[in-house]
Amino acid sequence: MDLVLQRLNHMVKYVFVTGGVLSSVGKGIVTSSIGKMLLARGLKVTVIKIDPYVNVDAGTMNPYMHGEVYVTDDGGETDLDLGWYERFLDLNLQIENNITTGLVYKAVIEKERRGDFLGRCVQIVPHVTNEIKSRIRSVAKRSNVDVTLTEVGGTVGDIEGLPFLEAIRQMRLEEGFENTLYVHVALVPILDVTKEMKTKPLQHSVNELRRIGIQPDTIVARCPEMIDSESLRKIALFGTIPENAVFCSYNVESIYQVPLILDEQGMGNFICKRLGFSDRKPDFKEWRNFVDNVLNPEHEVKIALVGKYAGLADSYVSMTEALRHAGAACKAKVCINYIEAEKFEQNPKGIEILRDFDGIFVPYGFGPRGTEGKIMAIKFARENAIPFLGICYGFQLAVIEFARHVCGLKEANSTEINPSSPYPVIDLMPEQRGIEIKGATMRLGAHKIIIKPNTMAHKLYKSEEIYERHRHRFEVNLDYLEALEKNGLMFSGKSADSRRMEILEMPDHFFFFASQFHGEFKSRPGRPDPEYYGFVKAGLDRKLGKPKPEF
Ligand code: GLN
Image (cartoon, rainbow, N blue to C red; front, top):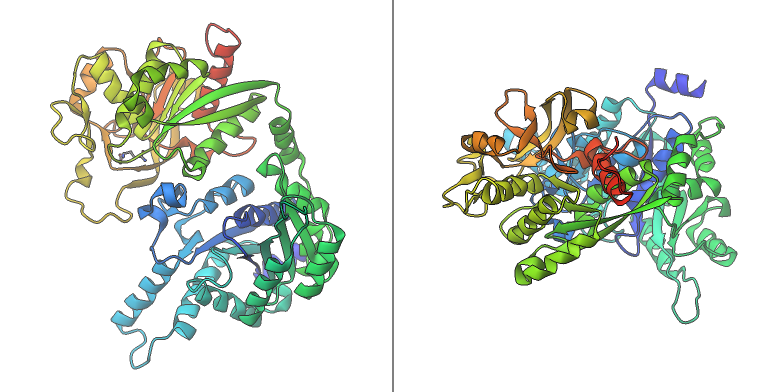
């Protein structure tokens, strides 16, 4: 009943998540888990990520330093936390769900230039904070949800974060106590020598939050182990909250267990009660099934990820999660080895290590570094009938490898790598020529793809029309299409006007598949993306000695 009434009154509740002590403590996972606990109780939620950096969006940032750039259906280049929200909550978020300092200031300054504030001095409070609040509210309104979660990136105390914290502080006054909830997530380290849990850094970060005027309603301690009762008591006492408002996100085998362990501690019920929703039993049935498959695999599939940002796992997080979703669907544990492509360039014999893998995966990438090593890995997969999956750059490099070694176009290349290649089989898209501005100018977001019947792609997608997300500037040069196809490369997915090649496969190979788009962004726990599923299943079937993959 309360739900119905709320929808009628369009009353949205707001949950704000802040972080303390360190960044990267898993705030994104806790935020996603809170969403999951609400969703499991039949509530409709959306999530906003605030990134206090001055970039307008994440698109221009190096994945090696900041992790992957996540792409939304509508072409937003966003923080990777949006990926966690989408995976945990099965949402399709939009550009507006990621708010940055750059975006907010850009909007305020544009308004000032237009004369919207004519005569007034434009200030952080109220003009910047108003812009932040209106963006949060407009997402809440457009999404028509019961609860809007907002995660403030960074750590409490960062200079960049202050206007955002001020904005969410004001929202309690404007929306009311019963409609707002502050969650603070902070690290509780365990000392190596004495094995003692230390709550002091957390206490300091709560104090810092209070200095700004925010008293948290609940605290999540991020600790390697479940916090002991003494630490829990201290956190409650110094945080000025009841003991039943303290929760712990401890280390678990799979990240997907986090909503379950927080719910077992009573966090879902606590939040619902505090926000005025009636008591309701959560339904985690499907989620638990998925988690069980992750935790109890019957097989193991070894994947070599041959990339350029292999040193930072977060650079490929959506890809590794998509591989895990696929693994769970085949009851297989997917073991991913990150291999720097450049190593093969320095030591060509080293390529032989790829023989030990059940699948070779070449992910997205930009620029020339490591491309020759990736091409060597693709050649190895093709010649040794090892299942291969290429995504975006991986797709383009597979075309180059085929052109060079099968079609005899020796110096075939992408003009991104060698602008004066005699055979530019991968070239800039016509509409990309002359573009000099780097931000948000690639071909981005979901586009329609037509799939050829009776192909591997058709078998996997079970449809002749799909929509997949993109992020690229280069593509297959149509001048070479005939040569490539004549020699046995099949383009089984194309854009609606047939001018863009989207999927390639090799009918005679055990499993050789690549796409210009990024299937990983639509992969969900319990509903793996078809190309990732096909790849992992093929790896498993080959390992089990089957003559061809069984989908
Ligand atoms: N660098 C290539 C392009 O811009 C591939 C991009 C990618 O892998 N996302 O087209």
